[in-house]
Amino acid sequence: MFMTLLRLIVFLFLLSVAVKNSGMVTIHYYLGMEWEIPLVVVLFLCFTAGTLFGYLSCFIKKIRKKS
Image (cartoon, rainbow, N blue to C red; front, side):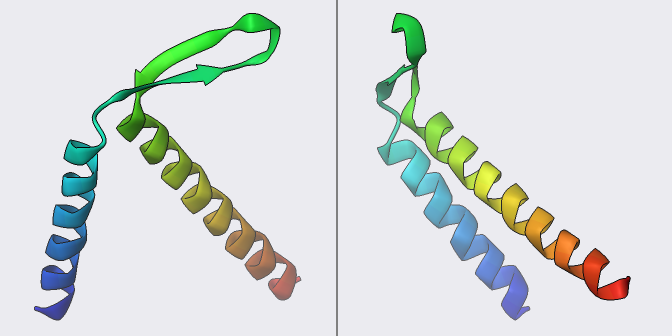
């Protein structure tokens, strides 16, 4: 029950962040390339990349520990 409530609170918080940050941002890349995408997409991509790197780091440590 507690975990369900916690997940609901986190989901609602992230949903409110997405709604409040729906503006467009310009991502400047090399050689004059630019991408204009919603800020919430940038936030989601950064969060996802951080999560994946964290899981990968833990996975590598676990593999090394077993060897």
